Length: 393
Picture 1: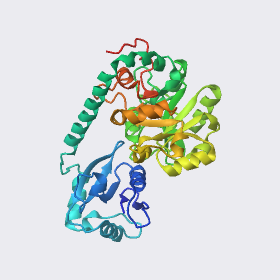
Picture 2: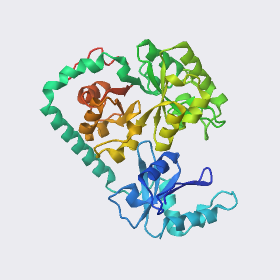
Picture 3: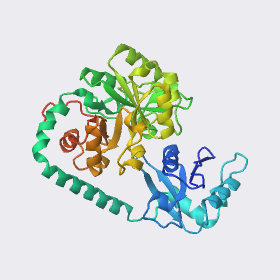
Picture 4: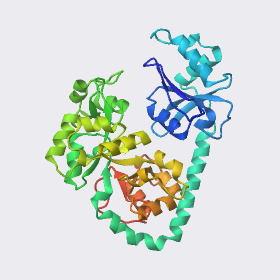
């Protein structure tokens, strides 16, 4: 079974498999979601990337969209053996001395930590796949170009189709998750507002995209996750005011139309315990367990694309998918499975696309809106004014 080794926390994180002890897709998703920045994920290479050798074991690091880098441990026999070796070297809570591991494992981990990776043609294959998805989708668009313009105004005129990403942009700055950004979105008529929620060192919920970005943009340089007190003292770009639980409750009390869409936190009970206005909260969720918990607590939810991937080629989705407020999907995933999402949209399920403005080809609000308007119900947006001069080429 795959597992996580956190050198920083000096602990292991395990996943559960099927009755035969084999990893399931859900257990792999759980491992991916549980991994923090700089944690090492030990996993069968074939589970990491199906083009890799089944007999090898990989150690990987994770970024937001996948495992960003990995090395192949060809000399190891099993995940269990590696886990035992790491455990034996951990001592009684003492720091793990990686140099005590066998030389091949040590050199591989050291190479990973120093970002000297074995380069596989993974990025090239991914780029080729993405190009194929894009080409196939645009062939479909060409065949259906007559019906595209008729749907544009229908999607544009209703701000309920848009979710302000990380609070929405404020004075051309993105990812602020700030009070000013939230108020600016509401003033522009966008009431569905996504905030990236994470926990501080003292277990308080705050709005922050990621800690590296926070550290760089506030100049509050920290080697570890800050406390809530420190977080609230640090303004984004030294201008925009930060948000914690108290501020969210205050904003939701002040603005009765404000609907909070959460990202990152996957714990419905925690959200219900900390916030007052549960009827105006929609959680984006990443595991079935969290979905069932949200249902039992009466919390609305969106499901991330990773939860529908198991069923994307089947004729029918399970009931818990159809009970969601919608599905949050990446731009390329929506293009890849456009026929499926068109049918879901026609059946009344809302499809929201994210991953805009990342510097990739045709990923601005206007581009995505024009390309995917028949496939999606709405978008996570940064630019609140993009519909003012709407014209698709």
